Image (cartoon, rainbow, N blue to C red; front, side, top):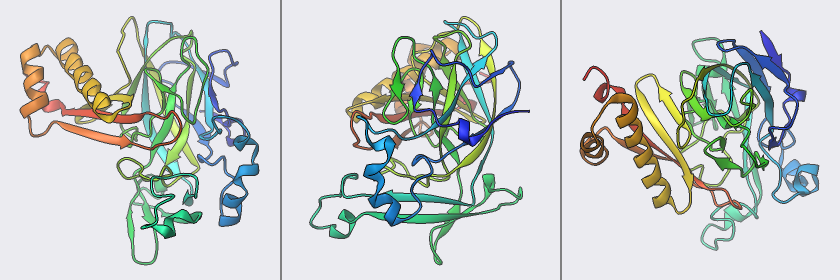
Length: 321
């Protein structure tokens, strides 16, 4: 199985001009060893206080979320869809989260004065039933733990004419979308703009709450196993996800209500074009179906970063009609 080692998974730009790290055939599984969003540099409060001196902090925007890539998928051409099947995500034994006096919604609040002080917290990852961390436990402290829910935070293909960063770049091609449903068992769909698709992925989160409120989740190194397929001659308006029991239409935008509306309309289009629902049926589901859901995956005020929304509908309402 082909593998991209961690020291070669340190790309910060979605760039279709770079030579591929690896070339894979459709259906071929491969492994990417990813670094955490902090580029592996923040393990303590001292590291955090020195972070302004890091090379990745000397640009505008600052560089974060290193990625493995580009990955060339044989047979992919402009105008196709790339389907990325996420087979497994094994996170490291420990992850880190942090906030600073210059990042986060409460960084300058008098009421929440404790939150204006820089802070780093380690979250330990215990193995689960599989023997690995893909289904393990996250230990916040001696009193609190939860099930790990690893996902890929930054993933996408190279845009057609732009070169954007993995820190704030987002668009129909993917980017830093921090969607917790980009997880094991899901298949993500991206429109292809370059020969070979030129896939990038990284920035794994071992766990994250909705909105990622202060801008750093349980950031962790990981080993990610994926495979790709190509859907020839198919176009979509934005990134889509197929989960085992549901469909999720993603959208990134500000203000939040615009992102919500676009995600819903794109999901309706998906239901009509691929599942044969009438426009009226799709509209009804989006308003009166109690199992229709809106997820606010990411709502972080950092630079030009947009808010990530997902509109979700269970498959049982679309299949076997």
